[in-house]
Image (tube, rainbow, N blue to C red):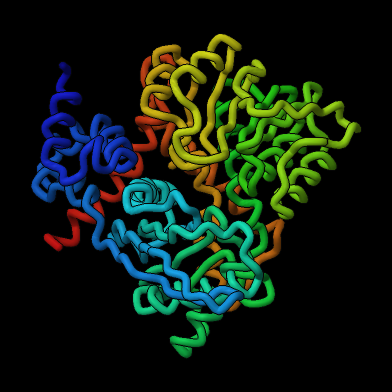
Length: 447
C-alpha cells in the first residue's frame, strides 16, 4: 500500500460515515482523500487545521418536515434538507432537488463536491445542497406552488444573499425557483438575491439555463485544445435529456460535433449521423411534457432503443449528463472497447469509483464534474453579482464570461494534474479545489 492509500485508509476510519451507512458521501470523500492528504500532511498549517477532516463534516445539516395540502384537501408530509458544507470562501451555494431518491447521504455527497466545484470557479462561493423527497410527477401547478411555499417556510431563516443562496437542480426549474423566491421575499420582507435561477423579469441572469451544458462543452474544448485537437467532427454520446444534456448537445452541434445520442430511463435516442438542432429541441419539448423519447421524428434518421444506454455507440467523446453512478465499470470497458478518447461528466459523480479506475488504467481522459460541469454555478455567481449591483448583463457578455471562467478552471486543473506525458484531471481538480479551500480555512482559525 502506497503512502497516499495508507493515509486515506487511516483518515476514512475516523469518519462517522461508512461505505454502508453513507455510500455516496464515503465515495466522494475517499476519492478526494487519496489525492490531497499527502499535500495536507506536507503543509504544517493545513495539517494542523485538519482541513479535509473539517470539510468532510458539513457545517450543519438542516432536516425538517414539509407539511402541505394537495388539491383534494388532504394533508401531505415530506422531508426536506439543507446540507451546508462550508462557507469559508463565500456564502453557501448549491442547488435544491425534489425527487424520491433524495436523502441525507445524497445531499451530503453533493454538498461536499459543491465545495470543491465552487472553489474551482474562483468566485466567492461556499458549498451546500438541499432538497426534499417529493415525487412531483402528476402534481398540479397549485400543488407544486403550495409545496414550494411550505418548503421555504422551513428553510427561510437560513437563506439570504450573504448567508445561503440555493438554486435549482433535479425537478427544480424556473417555475419552482419563482415560487420559492416569492415565498422567501414575502416572509423576509426584502427583495434580494436569495436564490439564483430566477426569471429574467425579477432578477435572473441570461444564460443560466444553458450554462452547465454550454460550460461542459467549453471545458471539453479546452481539454481537446490542450492535446492539439478540436471538437469538430467528433462523435459525441450524451446521456440524459434535461437542461444539461440538451444544451450540451446544442452547443456541441453548433461547434461542429456529431451528437449521436440523448437518453432517459426508458431508453436511448440514437442518430448515427448526428442530431440536428430541431431534433434536440424536440427532446426538450418531450421533457417539458413529461414524455419519453419513443417515436422520434424521421428527419434525422433517429431510432429509439428501448431499455438501452448510449455507451456502446463507439463515441469519441462520452458525456454522462443524467445522474450519479449511472456509468459503471462494465460500461466504462464498453466505451474503451469502442475507442473512446474522453469522458466528461455533465452530471454530479455519474461514474462509479470502479468506472473511474477502469478509465484511469486505460489512460482515457476523464474530466470530473467538479470541474467540467461548474458552468452552472459560475453563472449563478454572476447572477448574484448582477442582482447585487442592479445591473444585468447581455447573453453575449454572460457567455463570454462563462467561456473565460471554464478556460481558467481548465488552466488551474491541468496545472495541478500535469504529470509526465498526460494530465490527471481528476487529481488536478481535487488538488486545485482543495488548495483554495485550505488557504481560506487555515487562515480563519479554529471554527
